[in-house]
Structures are given as C-alpha cells and as structure tokens.
Length: 289
Image 1 (cartoon, rainbow, N blue to C red):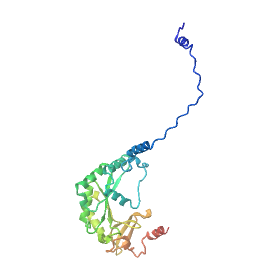
Image 2 (cartoon, helix red, strand yellow):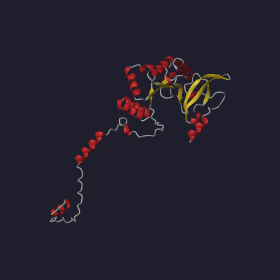
Image 3 (tube, one colour):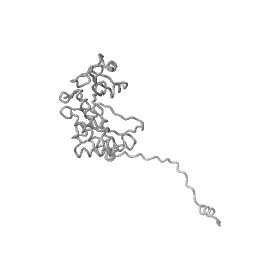
Image 4 (tube, rainbow, N blue to C red):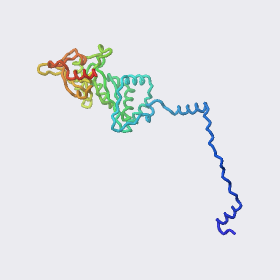
C-alpha cells in the first residue's frame, strides 16, 4: 500500500505504456502570398500615417551636434520658399511647431525677415504674426533695401527701426539697391544712402542702432559705406568688408574717391592715387582658378 505521494503516483502509472517517438519531420507550411487587394490595403494604411511634408514632422529633420553651425547656401532657395509661402503651401502652425522643436533642442533659431517700409508692420495681422513667431523662442531679425520713391528718407527708416524694436524685432541691415533688374528707378547714390543712414541713426535709441549699412552685396563681398571724410585734402568714401570672398578681408578699411553719382562699388575708384583696391589682384586669381 502506498505510504506517500511518490509511491501513490508510481502505483497509478504502473500499467501506462510510454508513447513511442515519432520519426517524422514536421515542415513549416509555406506562407501564402498576400493578394493584390491585401497589398493595396496595407499600402494605403501606411500612406495614411506618412506625412511627406518635412516641416510638419520634426523627426524627419536630420540631427546635428550641439556645437555644429547650421547654414544653408543655395541659389534660388529664397525665391522658392517665398513662392510656396505666397501660395499657401506651408501650414503656418506646422512651421511654428518646427520652430519650437528647434528651440527645445537647445539651438538658436534666427528668422530673417524683409521689410521695406514701416507701414508693413502697422496691420493687426502683421503684428500677430510677429507675436506668434516670437512665442516659439525664435529671434526675428530684419533687413531691407534703400529704394528711391519708396523709403529714401531718414524719417521712414528711423520709424521702421523703432517699430521693429518695439515689436521685439532686431534691425539687421540696410542694403543698397543691387545693380540688377530695374535698378535705374530704385537706385540711390551712395553718398545720399550714407546720409540717410546716418540721419536715421541719430533719431533712434541705442537698441535700434543694430542695423548695419548702407551695405552693398557686391561680387567681392558685402561692403559697408562707413562714411564720407577728407584725408590729406582729398574727399573720400571710407569703406570696409562685412563679409568677403577671403575671410582676411573682413573688417579691413579701404578708401575710394568721392563720387556723388556712384551707386555701386564698380563705380568707385581707389583713393590716394592707387591703381587698384587692395583685394582686386587676389580676386582675379580666385576667378582664374
């Protein structure tokens, strides 16, 4: 008679015959290929979850290091972006969300805006747009060209810069009208451009004097007119490079003969009897390579 559980178990299993091992191999059944209808259904479901607009999906923006300097320089990009904005191809809130993602990652985001006149900032919708962009943490900087018949007076520029500061925008550049397109109608002589810039600066507070200019985005680089002065009896323009094709040119002063009709860098001649400006030989070597 069984006295414990083990003995009881053996007693009950005494007449049980073990099952013989099965020598057959069980092969996995081949998976039936999806029907065309199933493939289309799955593709449609995936497409519904996919957003091809990189502005609305921050995860699609390639990550960069915290110390990397991010910049894009491509011909035509600005015009392409402007065209899409004008046609409403970017959703405003999606763009603002992207700005917030950039700021949250610890990067500095600066938005470059373009204003020709203070009246562009007088409407409620313009001011609301500025408020919403600044609410993302982005910094707004502003630039614009000096245009005859539109803003070629110091009062308009002073009011533009002061309005920008009041709205939290940083004045950045006053540009000389470029030597392209319909410049004959819009161009302003360099001497007058400097007078307008100087007189406008005298009207605004220190925090509005961050705008640099008048600046020419010329072939050798970005050249600023720093003033008109007289040296050894010769009236001259004082100039300097803000940016140059050679970084060594940056912040180097140079002088040109005063010409009250000149509207661009190539209208100027070196002062003090010099045959060339200091950068011309090196620029010619760059172009020949």
